[in-house]
Length: 348
Ligand SMILES: CN1C=C[C@@](O)(C#Cc2ccnc(-n3nc(C(N)=O)c4cc(F)ccc43)c2)C1=O
Image (cartoon, rainbow, N blue to C red; front, side, top):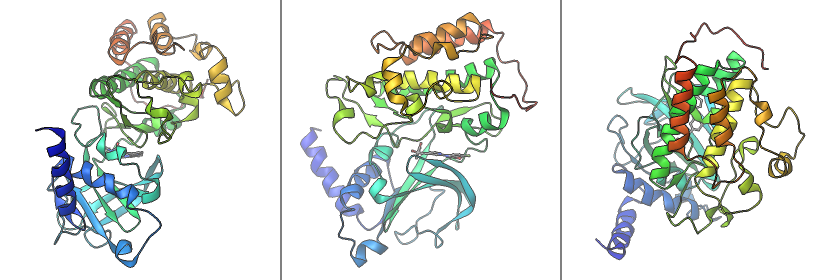
């Protein structure tokens, strides 16, 4: 099908979806989500306040008469799980099926359609599954798989810092997700420990929070970061080329993943121990924070972080290359040995 047919098909489809919540396909959700941001112009008339529309991607979440409303069809089942980019995340339960999952609520004016359009069609063991999204008045609620182990950021806070083998294993799983996303021209844009979620036994990690994501054109020429729609990720994890306003591509996720690695190994974000805000001037000017690699690290772990923290993105390792180096380093340190005795390690 050529794109113009597809385009009119999508327009027709969105018309049919407006004002309804259905069980549908990822592409339905991606099309509808694109109307939520511009639809949020100041004209908040009565109809808009009560409007309820969306697409659910699993039959475990059941719309009733084309509606799926909070407190009516689903409820937040306990306190806050965490806060993502512009949103709070809760555990929720479907009132009909009893199915429990996680829900992130975002105000429409802070909602980016890319948060859904980038991850909607993605199915990968290391990427958090999307279960659907609905708009109710001025709120967008995004449903996703519940990860009982919480976030890696919470784990580091709880343990102080992680042993080298555990940190390498989580970096490797994160790089598996990035390898898949980059192959599909998706840039994550905010790789950090808070956005890596864990299974109940903490053995499996998935990447989440597409609130800063973008579908990059393979030619890489169009620098989407400068089109004004870009929302920068976490300052301590920003790659130098973003700060310099230079050409940006998938390599910015690699830089962030190694900033996350330093956070896992030390118990604190890079740069903040040596510099005051605003950090971005230092990140652009200074050498990469290699001095923050713990002296106790194995030389192959040093090699991993060094090749991920190359200031020149063309010299920086890709996700595939860095994952290979990380797996070698994990073998060199003797594989996953450290137990979860959970004793606290004072940040270095
Ligand atoms: C597929 N998809 C859909 C929305 C998404 O962009 C997100 C997110 C996000 C951001 C921050 N935090 C969490 N977060 N989720 C959970 C959970 N699912 O159990 C969670 C649990 C915590 F303990 C803390 C933060 C948490 C989730 C995305 O990726």
